[in-house]
Length: 170
View: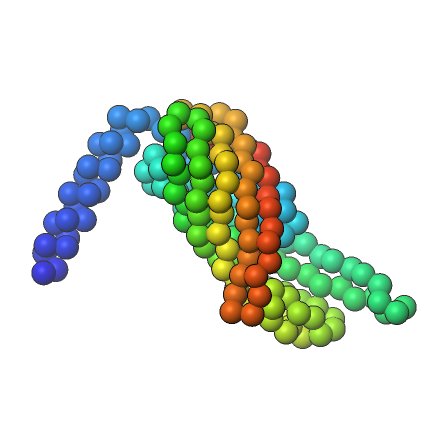
């Protein structure tokens, strides 16, 4: 059985690599996303495994300070999204569907509820996320633009969110 699975995976890999060469798609994408999975922003790298599938990793670091009854409270987040994406469409216009997580370290100086989880001090937080939106990306690379619905969720909460990205594919 193990040999059959390895044979099937090899056939799929060979077929996808020949299809990939025929399409001559840009493999790499780098972009800045405002709001979206990074909450305020994220810097992202995406690799196109196939013309219609990619993996994404992003980075964000932000701090929120607010005043509450003459007390100052600060929350910091360092982390980023990790996503798998699927694209529907031809040429440069696509429906982007993605699924992944936003994971990172939250540091706060008071009791906070972050993504439905009670956080006090310094804790690691992971929440689920998905993407449904429009993506403009020319087949051979160049300017990239996307706008999407990017909610965050876990067993305790669901938060609607949207994001917009600009960058390039090469």
